[in-house]
Length: 270
Image 1: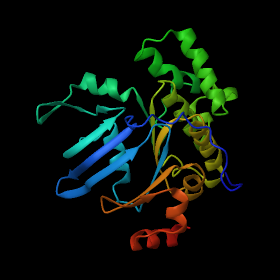
Image 2: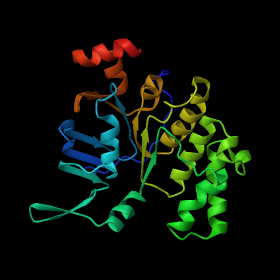
Image 3: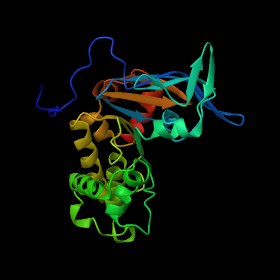
Image 4: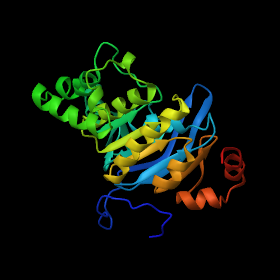
């Protein structure tokens, strides 16, 4: 390990042949006549951080939303933890799962959006414990104890009783991360979680995400934070025009991109 690469506390290595946490095969998605995804093949091993880069309109966020079936794919397959997402295969045909079954799958996948989507009439702690108590039936006392642990983990234990209007954007986003973690997900998806924040607020959110990575959480992160990709990512995917143009180890792709489109993009953001 070189001095450039910080120590990572990763999950134990998977046994040979173990299912990856995320696997997508030839995923296509269109909105009307606009083809947004044109055959996406991605594999994310357990405990890895996959960073997705690309220009606006490249399909990054749509791909992320397809992973937890917030968007229905038109063709292909997506597996999370070895299970098809959104569908059941019978013979050679796919049958879409009922809403209740899809909701059960989503409970195991945490998602953090650009906008924080906190309930404005609830304090930070109430936002965090709402889903565990209402969806999972967790007791209030246990939920509050766990909620305080999570708020402390993202550095906001002292803001537990503050309402969203009393929190900065960065603090609200960290509450959103704690809220997602409260459901004990096996996978975390981040859709440009710092893009709506003032620059001075970005660092605390990235620190919370780095802590998650060190704990071994599998993460797929759509972001323009190149430093995060270089420091924390296990793999980097560059998308453009609805396809994966290039992928590989973040430091290799960032320092020596092989595809002209990747080089052009990085020349404008580095």
